[in-house]
Image (cartoon, rainbow, N blue to C red):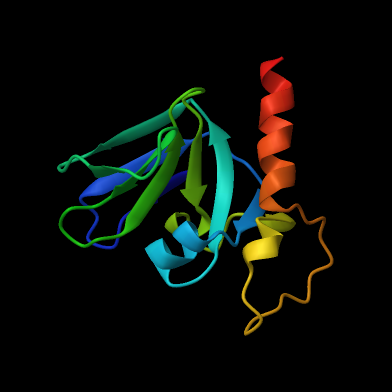
Length: 135
């Protein structure tokens, strides 16, 4: 998959993926004024172009990247694993994305609802899942 920011200064290349998970956490909603439609691309992501992304360390375990020129959100990067979650919107409409799940469902506000019937996880469930993987 190949995508770019609005101004085209930063390009992102990742292996093709088809699942999109939605994060409803307060931080993601504040970052993008809505839920984060995330494509989990793993650590093998190439970031290039004429600009370098600006990075914001949003927690002890993650940073968020954006274009310093146009402000496009580029990634959520998990520091312990190196995994990147990329916004589905970076990649045009030709990708065959499917909504596969929703996380931090307990933080989703009441003013929106998706029609897709997907598995949901609370924030505590998600954190427990990552903690179990560390064992």
